[in-house]
Every structure is written in structure tokens, then in C-alpha cells.
Length: 336
Ligand SMILES: [Zn+2]
Ligand SMILES: [Zn+2]
Image (tube, rainbow, N blue to C red; front, side):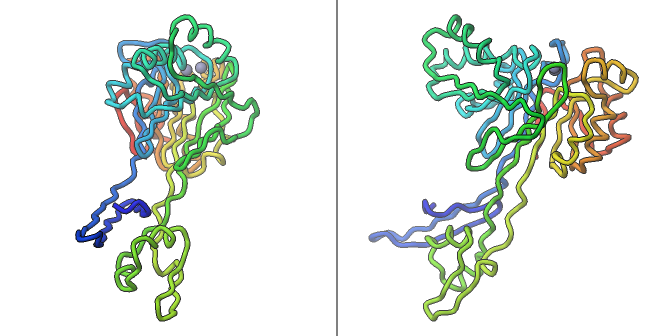
């Protein structure tokens, strides 16, 4: 495929050209760009035989982003059949053990595997002071840099990461220690090229990227075709929000307005709402109320208390307020 062309989701592009004595055909189909969330762990506090502590893997266009890193994350990561080499960024919501006890094990394994590319860790600032002695002691000879990026302390949402396809913003949460969720915002895609117009006007393929980025086209006869006649709108950019651990915070509804998938903790059912208040957690009903208030498209609940042998009671409770709710479970993968 020509270097200068970057097709969008669902586009089939065929180019015919000539190079010295060779005629060639470029054929490129671009399927739906991947945006998935793998649940590696969705239990709270202590690991059980039913659930691992919190960890999730976001796969956006084959780049991996880890959210939280409870004990055993590296094993769960392998069960999800993902490659460590595509992971360069780890986001940690707060410094409770059920969200970070897997970190030193993961970093140690990466070191033993000969990793050389840096690992970026976004966490509250105390983490670096806690982790450096462990890295020095247990990961001697580590051949990659571990770069800590302190998360903002303020109560407002801030952008903490950006690359070509993604922005990550914090979601202020209320917990017993400083805590924030993360809002993953895919960047807007370029519009789809209209193949019929390209063929009709005989526009050369090397102009396609310019047109996708906003240019029009002038024919050799001087007729001008504006950009809008040459493209159809791009698929809407997608969003994923992770909110764990937190008391019920309806004030986050504006920030979470219309997200495609919201993962929200539902540590308890309403029968333990007093315990939820005491421990700064949410009930399944509260997670669903926030989903409804924010008008999200889909809710996934998790971070279950180990006292539940069956989470269907939490699911039923949430669905009474927000029907499009699903239960997180280890091994499940949600498409955003
Ligand atoms: Zn937790
Ligand atoms: Zn916690």
C-alpha cells in the first residue's frame, strides 16, 4: 500500500500503478479499528478463587494500556493472549494494594524477558518513592527505564497522556486515599474518501491523504470540488471510562456524558449501602444511577466484594436503574 495513504475504518482502496516495467495493484481493506477492554481482574480487596484484584487492559489499535495492576496481573495478561512488548503505559488509580501489588512482579518479569523500551507509569506521586527501592533490590540489571508520571492532586479532570490516537484524562473520585479514574478518548478519525469521486475525477492516489485532511480538488480544466463532496463523515470517536474505587459521585455525570462504555465499581449491593459510605465505595444501584444520569451507552460493573458468591444480585439491582448493564468477569473482553 502507498505510504502516503491512510485509509479509514471500512474502506476498501484499490490502486493501480506502474513502476518501471511492472504494473501493480494496491488493495487495502481497513476493518473496524480495535478498541477493546480486557478484564484481567474485577474483585476487590483480597484475591479469591473466583476473582483476581483490579486490572484491565485497553487495546486501542493494537497498542496496549494497562489500568491498575492487582496481584497476579502478569498471569492474567498472558491468559488474555496479549503481548507484553506492546505495553508501554500503565495507569494506576490509587495506592491500595488490590490495585498495585502486581506491579513489581510484572516489572520483574519484563526485566527477565530482556525488555529495553521504557515503561511509563502514571500514579500518585508517592509510588515512585515506594517502588524505587524494590526495583533496585529485586530488578538489578534492569535494562529498561521505569518512568513515573505523578497524577494531578486537584479535583478537576486533567489530561495526563496523549498520543496519535488517544487522550487519557483523569476522572476525580472520592476514596479513602487520593484516587482518580481514567477517561480514554479516541482521537477523531479522518473522514472516509468517496471512491466514486476519486475514480470519476481521476485524482491520483498520492492526493488522497490531503483530501482526507481537508483539501479540495481542482481538475485540469479548472473546476473546483470542495472537500465535502469528496468524503463522507468519519465514524465517531469512541470513549471508555474507568471509575474505581469511589463513593457515589453524581457530579461526575457531566464529565462522563455519553461515553460508550463506563466501567464503574459496584463493591456492594444496596443492603450494604451504609458499609459503602463508610468505606468510600459504591453500590450497584449507585453505579447504575450515575450511568443513567450521564447518559452513557453501556455500563460494566465490577470490583465486587468477596462476600458475594454470585454477583447476579448486583446485576439485577443495577439493571433496575440502567438496563444496559453487564457484569465484568475475568477473561471477558468488551468492545468499545
Ligand atoms: Zn480496590
Ligand atoms: Zn481502594
